[in-house]
Length: 412
Image (cartoon, rainbow, N blue to C red; front, side, top):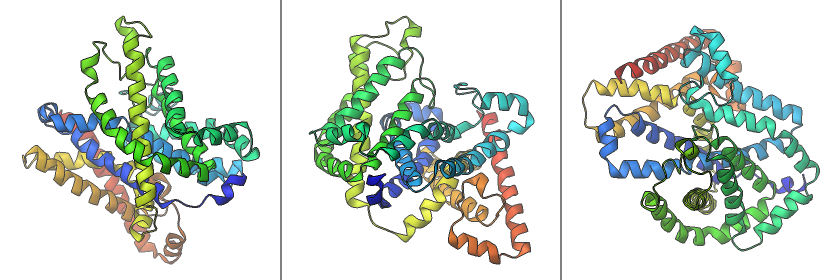
């Protein structure tokens, strides 16, 4: 692909990946607090989580699409698929069959693993639904990636380039695509963690990330032109989105599935609020990417480390949160203190797991740890007793996380 020759590693995208995955710790610590009354009564926590939920995963799928553009640019399609398999499937299987206790009922677990849209409480992979969807998107869109690489000056990329040179083109074209997805699919079933109408929605975000990084010069120029307009627009969108309930009596207009409650598939209220929803979400994405391009596109030793650690941290953060919340619950701390302390302890625990697992060579793939040249040198020099110690340590951490995951739900 001609445009890929100018595609260099973007530190701002790496920083956003680290920061957005890190937000999951705060988000899930608040969400899974035992004190549900506090969450329901805390207006600021509920409002922040409501707004954040509309853009954090959207932005992560855009970043994943951008990362896929980097990964695909110098690989054959066979190498790309092999990389996706070894990067995404081992963690998915670890969480499904071990941390989520799937080994105790392997037949039903496997059936649910191969069921598209099994539902929130039936999905066997828990919080790794993101990885599950990402794997499907990466495989399903492979023909598109091949076509774009073969025809870098073809109709699709040429058309997107022209749109990016139109004022507000980078804002409006994705909004129209996402709005159409909402109008077509959202009325019929509520969205659940990437299922039903959210599945094509996140696929669009992923594809947008890939396509935009195929034409980096045009994309970043358009992004810079929109930086201040989006910054001015975003507070108004946040206010409108936060006050949407005062404008309609339709239930589930954000979540979807209002047809099941007897409402028409297309109404003026659903059409306008769906437009507000996608405009609010995409404006947040542009705001984050635009300011990150200005402020965060610089190398850092901390970034190098966190970029390697963040995927493993994502894989284990939720069972660690459950474990830490159970332990903190014994102290009967105020909920605010519980959250702050939980964030600190969970962050440290995630990094501890990463440090241990990267030294256990046969466990790395299952925790999403990539083999860097530095780690390869360490493995070549590692003593037998050291390898045994870290493998046993990893197994102990797995048992602890399983205990936390199983015990947490008994407390509710």
